[in-house]
Image (tube, rainbow, N blue to C red; front, side):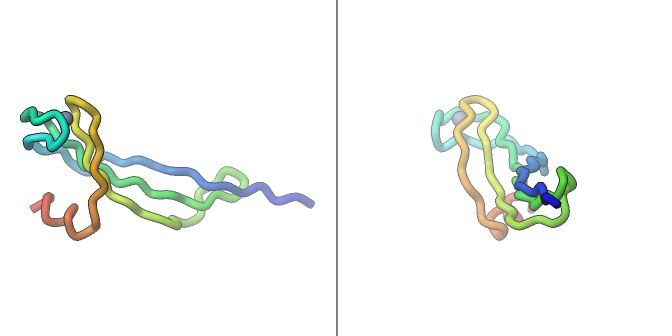
Amino acid sequence: MFILFGFKTAVKLLFSRPDTCRYCKQHAAQRVEERATKFTLFFIPLFTTRRRYQQTCANCGGATELSKREKAALAG
Ligand SMILES: [Zn+2]
């Protein structure tokens, strides 16, 4: 018998908002994404092992990691 397991990261766009980017200093859309790492068994995602939030600039692609609290504050 053999067991096939692994991890998979699912990226979900939560919302985007216009803001001044800290990297390129341009006023551009900042995408707030959720990156969930899931444990998979036979390619079937079973549960989320890790959930992170990230803000990505649509202009330069510069990414900043956000805490859950920061993400909630941005969502308003
Ligand atoms: Zn930028």
